[in-house]
Length: 461
Image 1: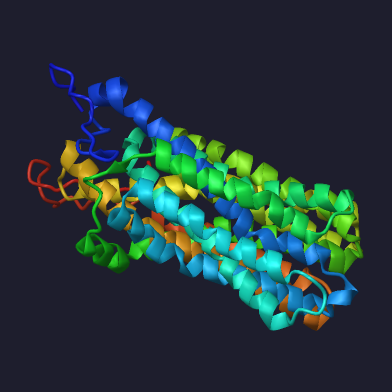
Image 2: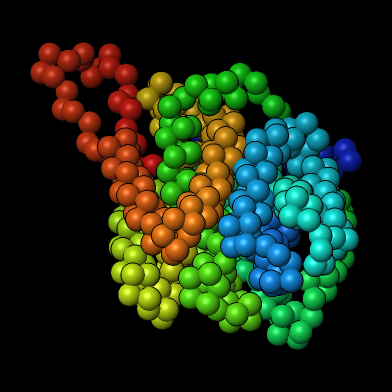
């Protein structure tokens, strides 16, 4: 976009509401926008980070639950599955909450809501508590999964299209790191012979700090509104559901494996809680750290290309895991599983970068240009992100249910990994067929170039 001859004025505020926001204007971005956007990104990451920790809290809690709790491995997989399920469902209303309350206020509210599952678990976490009670507490923890959707929707509005891959990758990656952090804290508590209530007590003050800082430091953009028309258009658009399917393969894998890794090590390889905790955090940590790299690579080479070959690598890693599982090789199994985590994190960044690119490409195909095309892309991509994030998170539910059934049926996770391998193969085919296959050559009697509409192409998505 061509910059105006005079620099725009800084955004005016009323109660930390920004009235003017145009990140596609390079002058505005360089003189005013970038500083504000980065500040909001930082505190958004902090809140989302703690949200992920609380969402995946029960992946650590089940490691504390020995024979005295009277729970079977299937019971434990059911508990973590319920946290995954609720976390996926609440992503839809969380997406729309940003426009209703403003990004700043909703971050305060969503951070404060994390006190509910934390205090509830602190109250009931002891032998003799019923399975149903533990299940309900795990479901409460699902509210932490919603923070991702509202945070991504909020940050998507702050950054220009050329920076979205990096910004969304960093926002999501910083949030994802909440998974290994809670597992590291759990490791420290187990290693110090502490109980689960100590782990919960550590998080309560940090939740309060995140809410207070969001109140003091974040902003809301007044132009962000819930566009029911955009939501309907996004829900009707096939690409919303195609990207939801692909996001199941990347983020669904990441969150599902994050919940299940420790339980699989305990159940299939007989690891003690401490032995499992020593390894469990490594995969989610590396997968979180590499997510911004996936976004940056997608900015440079195209998200579809990175996503395509990432699925190939995920299939290879899964094949190695199957072999290791059949041979009962713990070192090979653990190494390949960690590699799969890294690849799922890389794919998280590249798939989410594809979303704004897809809808911008559709805008160009409609003949739109400049700010008009950018506005169309923001409108549809923002509306679709909540749905895509919610459906993608349901992949975590599927993974844990697959593990539960595999252990009940064959006594190991091998059957589940075979199913995951087949799914990654389908994701590869869908990515290639929809976003990378070259369009058919135009016919010789096609409309003259001067009259033709721009051709829809996702080659650079």
